[in-house]
Length: 371
Image 1 (cartoon, one colour):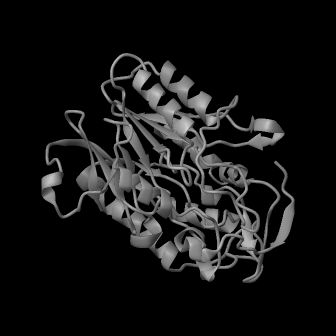
Image 2: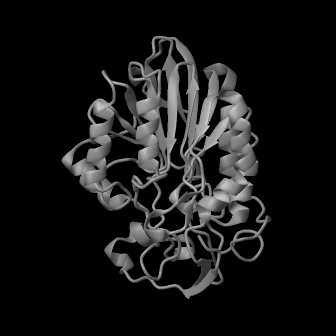
Image 3: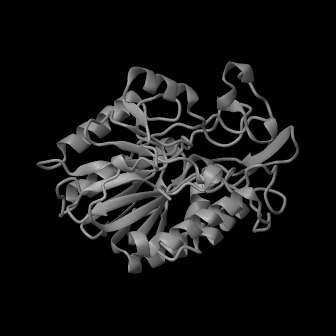
């Protein structure tokens, strides 16, 4: 992918009054059409989802013995509320200082560190949208804060991390010529991923770069896998590299399986088909995007069907427990896959949100605890 810069006037081509939650962005201006209000209304109207359990309702929490826990944080959005984080431009090296957004991420990190011993937290899955507009300084600052974790963390890429841009003023912005944020992500976290290879059991990261579809140049998908005490953790990159609608910066909100050589879908299916220790619902799949068929912010229906067919036809028996995601900035659980829940965690940037996934000594999985 190229690295040319484009300067563009801002244009909101869809009337904000038609769907204000979809297009309202920072400083009252459109940012990216990623908010999932319409699809969630449709999903909850036809059934298939429910709000996450009230954390104070102990009747919904399995109080049995726990072997260990994983923690989830997501949607930290460093740089939100600023036209241009740090130094001028999106390829800046640092600066920006701290604000409420970074303070909430720091507080979430501290929550996890304090809870490590009590809940035996072995791993943190950080599910992307670390940045608000994929500026280098935003991603560097997010990593600095995540590096304060006292247990290993695995970063996955989100749609806000995908296409770098910065506002020049309230009416125009500059952005990269293509979705080069995955290249930047790979660069900023390169040594971190290398270190995880020595810290985590069976850690694997899909090789990059790969040739993108339709001559789109080099892609750097963030697809990973590892083991924790008999649980197989898989992280997949479902973020589109397609540009947002005309007049809007960054990428669109959609999810995509990326079914091309070297893409997410062949890596994911080949990996699980070749994994030698598939057990009774011992695979947990993590992604920024919930892999659900809801149009905006989601997989296409045929991609959902492909995922459903694959996980239900994998080996003999039920091997995939479910999916864990962010992106929607709210807590909910969908049962559209049947027995395999899609558990969505709210945005850390809003309330220091951290979810625990507790693996019981009997192999049970409890995802209803929030720190």
